[in-house]
Amino acid sequence: MDKSTDLLVNNSILYRCTQKYYDQQLAQYDVGYGQVVYLIMIYEHEGITMKELAKMGSFDKGTITKAISKLEKLHYVRLEENEKDKRSKLLYTTDQAKELITKIYLVRKEWWEHLNSGLDVESSELFAKVMQEVVDRAQSYMDIESEAVHFFGLQKLSLLDYPGKMACTLFTGGCNMKCPFCHNSELVFLPESMMEINQDDIDQFLDKRKGLLEGICITGGEPLIHPGLKNAIKKMKAKGYKIKLDTNGTYPGYLKELVEEGLVDYVAMDIKNAPAKYALTAGVEQLNLEAIEESMHYLMENHIPYEFRTTIVQEFHEKEDIEAIGQWIKGAQSYFLQSFENNEHVIDNRLHAVRKEILEDYKNILLQYVDHVEIRGIE
Image (cartoon, rainbow, N blue to C red; front, side, top):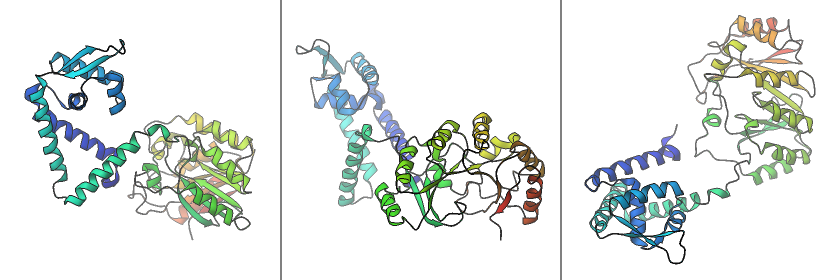
């Protein structure tokens, strides 16, 4: 994980360190960082109401009530009747709070200088400006379209991903599994700095490739974790493209919906391993196989063309596992064994591929249960 671009972790570290510093410096006053912000805002806006305080600082009512109650008990804040609105109180700092507030301002200044140490004036001003812009955007969190599907990769041409068709491949971010052999680790862990492909750029690309490309492969990550995928596919279908969907099978209801509405033309579903080893191979402690089996059985009803596929890894797969997989998917349309390829993007790069001869042995085992079995990823 690249800590320099991990806002979640960095924000947590900054908050905790700030909290510890303020708590240490203000210990003699029996207040800590949890009350400091409210005290400053009341001091600078004497007569403010709790509602106004909540709006100004994006605080929730419960948090404010708790903090103000403590400040009142310590005699740093007093509450007065609000003649304009009997339901709310006016907040004021007390004379006893004046010395404390002076100390808070000094502590705040020292902490800011510490954070800015080593920066020249221009860099310090830029830092303050950028921070304010980030805070302003953060306060408009309700504007975020949380159900939209986000694409983080585009392979402009593939002759392999969609059987029998020239296609492009779009990569969604996020996955509910953490397969150790996954070669798209960034799509699983999704660093905050990872650049998203602009939807307008995708639309322009697809418009230009009409008549040249036949299909679009949607992979991940796990595409079906995105509620907005359906609308995105509708737009792609309207442009005349066939859609191939890659999935781990954990969202059978959504899969059925897309298939039955004619939005998906081909499905490639991962079979990670035999049932007994499934959770281990998927990188999770526990896994309910019912959803996976529901997707598997639905596809085997032959509503549309599909394939099952397994990436074979030396550390996870043995003959007994392949036999169990064969029995599990007996009668399937087609099955592909994929050779594991190690690289810097794999979640666990200590893993190993198996020899070609072993893949051939596994293929022969599977041919007892599935008529069409192929091997991918070997010369």
